[in-house]
Image (cartoon, rainbow, N blue to C red; front, side, top):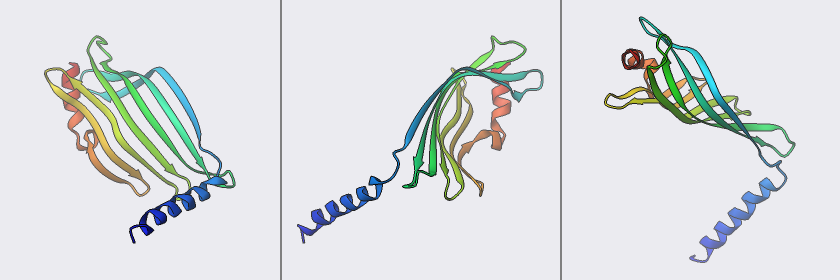
Length: 160
């Protein structure tokens, strides 16, 4: 019996690799987006909030044996800052690191990771959107403060 387990495991590996032998290899594309500006990210009572970020998007596209797209992943990483549009010297650093999954066969899109994160020294986290989101049907897991309503007041105070 002890010999059967390694033999069974080896057979599974060979069979799983055989299924990939005819499939088209995934493609990878990296896109750098320096200095992206998002206008009107948020409206505070006396000023607007915009942001400037440097982003990197890594797309991986998966194919079946016929070369049809079966899915994609997009890994996004960005750093930058949000700023008070009336006084751009008032800014809060922010970043994000998340992955978007697209299943072409199931027509399903999901996102996992930290979509947004901003921390002010001495204040703490003023904006956080992290966890998992599944679109169609829409489900939400994690901490998404734009939905809970926590972010606007705290972020506006940090930028005042």
